[in-house]
Length: 426
Image 1 (spheres, helix red, strand yellow):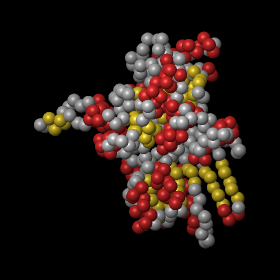
Image 2 (cartoon, one colour):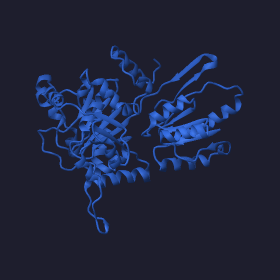
Image 3 (cartoon, helix red, strand yellow):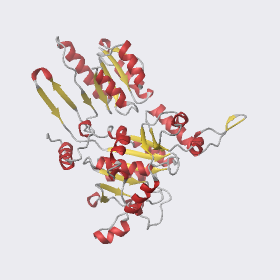
Image 4 (cartoon, helix red, strand yellow):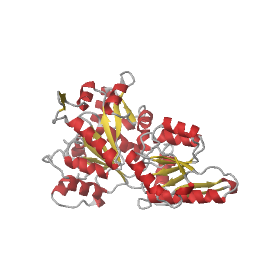
């Protein structure tokens, strides 16, 4: 059997291959010895090497394109999310099954994940017997971190609209505003005015954590727009420093299916950088301001790079370092995207092409949303556009059969998702 592998980093690829080489069934496998991360490479591998199986890391920046191509070419695909041992055992099972089967079968698509996290285990079709067998388990908890390379790049816009996109699919979503950030969402949602009207009180859980108290999730955050909001109360004294340990207590006390942490432009803080290691996905917002993009360049003199560099450059260096050495990948999101400018120069400066492109929006539209405490995602004439721009992020976190939204049957979708989370067959 010929196998090709695409992993999110070369470090992860090498680790996987090393583990595979130690397997007792490796002698019967031909392995393509290059990390298949790009669509062009996969096309070449398929044309000149003809693999029978490809293992794809679902966190690859170009995952969708690779997946589509592999399926178009009728190559069997195994989706890797977390547990290498689980994938290896499954590949061994496939190999043994192929040895026993004399007649060719229709290709099967399998979803293999970490059993501890309880994602989809598999979706298996046996065409010859006209049997469709489907197994569902719960959607795993996800911690998504959103940050900005500089102030105003759009992390809050991305994080809030992404929260709405998950919420409309019936998922349990929490939005967390980094406690050391200047309060914004508290006033955006006009919570101070709604407290009296709705006879409920907002609880600032970050302040409780600072006082050594434990969050009572039974009361939840401030729930609105089907999202639990854990945000900074602008009536309180600002929190100047929120430690790594406090952030862990805060986030893991919330325990939502999807927790989105908006770090704003605090990526340079040492405690924030330690916290990044706990994220399932890291999205960094950039906008095409050429002056700010220039901040990513090195400061040099006659001897080369100077010791003191801009914080934006140091952030990029840190992100690249943990991606290369530890396999912790991050992705850029191009905010305020428009085709009327030279985007290629921006991507060259970043060192990688963004995974998602959030459109530029008329300022008048945005300021009206602020006055009404509403979100761009909920405007009927924008929802399709925002959905399209967020698709690369959403498909990484939502089971594929539930990605599409039937706008006429939202209630039915939510019901199905609730059954899905409980592990029930619908």
